[in-house]
Image 1 (cartoon, helix red, strand yellow):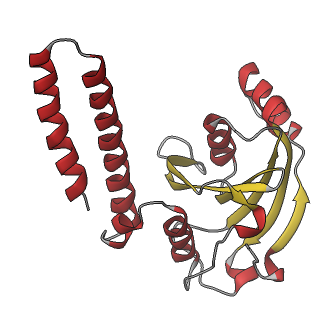
Image 2: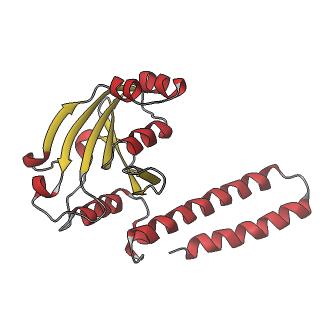
Image 3: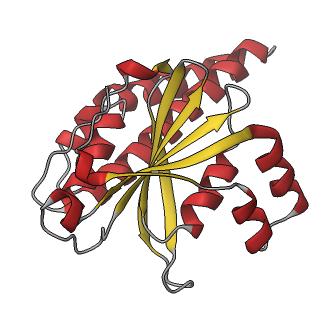
Length: 217
């Protein structure tokens, strides 16, 4: 169960209309807000003051945002939009009935938009019973606390444990996901290919890709 200190509690409802009335968004995105999201709550504010930890170089505050969904699904572009427009690091807790899922991204300062972030790679848990969600505050400053949040959420923890820093781990994680996606593409091609010689060629490449995946650190 996620149980942050009372000093971090904020518990403020954010009308979703604030996003599509005050910001320039497309009609499609507005329809997604209406169709997919029920309510949004700003649950916690993790900062140097509320946690009595060191301020981060990159991470100034971590906001815990709970989004109650109308169905067990959300468009990732909707999450990305909210993530980009709020100028802090965010942990999303998506809720549908008794189930919940944690969403978190690796964020970097945007070179083109002052005070905004470049959202780079999302990590998420499986859908779990809300009471079984877990996220612990570990670290002496906000940078490390946020990095540890990401490490707790990622499925393949070995990459993060064997990387020099969080950015390198995120890059490796993306490369591994691309490799897994390519392997799936090759497997489908082999199933659908009629010519035996092409099947053999694809099967050879598939073995090589699976070997790379097995050796991936």
